[in-house]
Length: 153
Image (cartoon, rainbow, N blue to C red; front, top):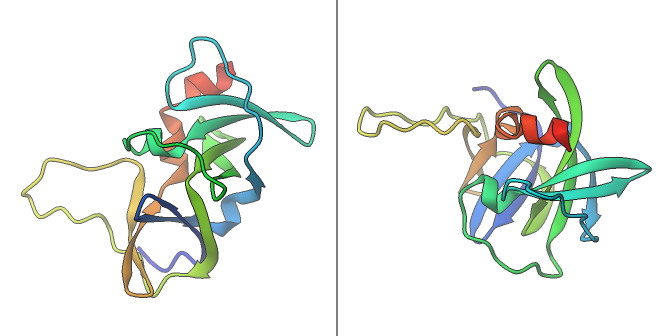
């Protein structure tokens, strides 16, 4: 996979993640999230962004990580995804946003040495930033699994 250009880097615990900055609409401080009855655990609820209701997912839950308390570094990232043939505005809550930067080179595809029968649909590839490994997220596929819940929201 070639260089993805500028990325927004963020973290959950000590794990680094990145997504193309062109997808990001804005980064918000935490605000009240309106819960939705019977919503899946990954869907925290809805927020108002400039007069529009935007569904908010929990990035930790999407990535299969245990829940943790919000901190003063927690943020809501509002972005667009392409789901079911249309562009939708969604958001996720992250532990912290680090910076907009470039990765140190090309993004490598997720390795598959035949030892593991595992492919994560949410991962576009692996990059490096300042020598550290960074998981590059595929936002379209990440939110694709929530598409029915998001369209109902």
